[in-house]
Length: 97
Image 1 (cartoon, helix red, strand yellow):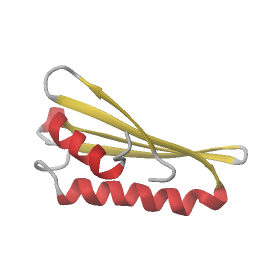
Image 2 (cartoon, one colour):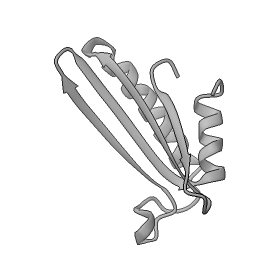
Image 3 (cartoon, helix red, strand yellow):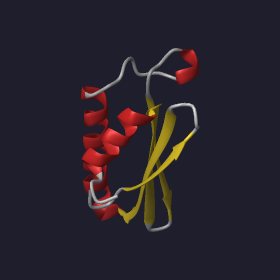
Image 4 (cartoon, helix red, strand yellow):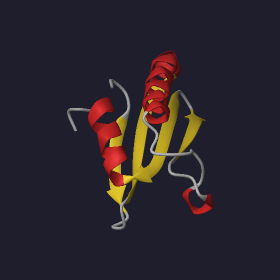
């Protein structure tokens, strides 16, 4: 990953949240979105179960937001799911972290 920076948090009960964020100018947005798609593709391919809100029976879920402010665009990808699965995702997508 060249643009997305990851931050992880654990709820202490085996579920984690991984937030990936990038703030770029419009010219780099396609590259950032390619990284977002790569993360989601891995998550879907290695899914621990059905995607959906955890409190509604989903095993994992993701939320993607794109916000523009002046010349800068911030992309945020938030993924929730089992801690071990999310750590494997992080190791695959951001091995230097």
